[in-house]
Length: 435
Length: 112
Image (cartoon, rainbow over all chains, first blue to last red; front, side, top):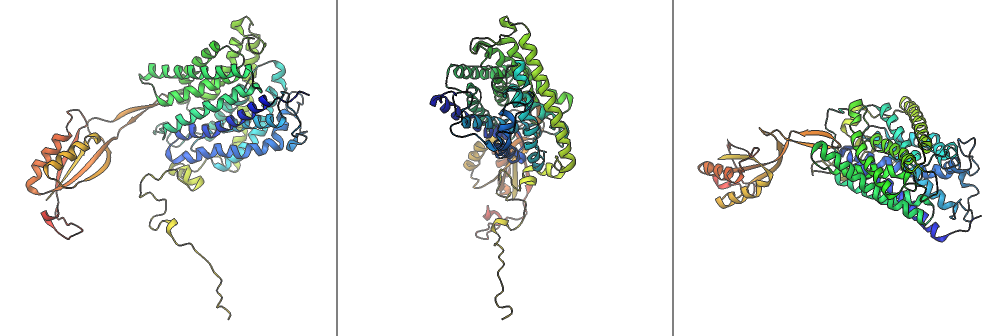
């Protein structure tokens, strides 16, 4: 049994907290991009992921993902309810198993939350509440087991340092499936659906970037040189991706946009995630520029093919995840991990095809299960809000709230006496009766 | 009495207000407005998706003036609001049949 390292433990626990912050960050990144009447629902979908996933993670999530593997496909139930995990039990790295449980739990949270961007402004909250635990169980846990839990992708030798396949491709494919199940928003793409608060978007992107250092550098599971290399690669790939996206912006419409800068950062973060420990900082710049510019070009695809992926989960997370996963096959160097080398470093196509297989299988698996699950939810409890609720605003329809009071006359739906000022109704026993 | 209504560019509001004060106009009503005339809005781009915004932000300014002052007030507002570029706005005059100052009950020109 390895001896506990206080430094490694401190870094992994800190990283777990950093990654947790990414989900509220994502909520604001997404929340700013929707219309004012749907911002609360957007934030709430992320917050519900924060509420549901940790509970499942402790019950059966961690066990099914990381308690060994059965046929390379799924873990066991030996650690149901974290049975057997105590303060003395250690993970593979010199950190307590509890630290590893926490670190992996926050990954699962944000993966689920990422999907919500594809269904923005029109998914029933109860449908989302049912989708989250089931998709997590049927898709996320197996895929995490395949890639990180010693399953078949791990055995195949495909590399994913911090979640290119497990997190981004996985969420992107599920997002596409749900966008197709739910259909287009009322008025899309004819009516303007402009982001209502770009400062939120930039705030969220900034929080994501900050938290992502925990995501990537934390995945070294130690306070060491590998974590530091992942940190630098995360920094530089993201910066390069912002430049790449802005370049496309300037070429296409002669102006650099705020939304482009924020989106470029996320595209770069996504793409460097699987690769951050396997490529040199120069390789990271290449990945960043490619991801930023290609993702910028892909956001137009939804208009071309007519699927309403509201906030571009496909163009940013699926495409970005695929770019990062495949480019490992080109740019991997043995410098940091001593691992296999990519095509450009003399490793041939051996790594490239393994990366491609991993990406393709996760896309198909996640898409098919999410599509079927989405259809079932839609047919049973309903996954699409009524047209009236959608047009009036899902915040009001689903949560009886609105985010902003923009004028003094917009006190709420009740005209006349504001409900808040009405005297509370009190029913008291009539003591005179029967006297 | 007449009601002078002007729809102008928002950044010109301060100049118009100062010019009217210098002329002797004591009060006005200002409303945020949006609309378009011959200039037809502008374009915004979000992740490559272009939105044509037809309605341009404007300020609507209303002043009640005595019949004798109308032409001069029109001149003052037009002068102060003018940039010479498209979208400077419009001013029009409508008759106001009766005016009353709520606080004192004064009517007609005394209420201005």
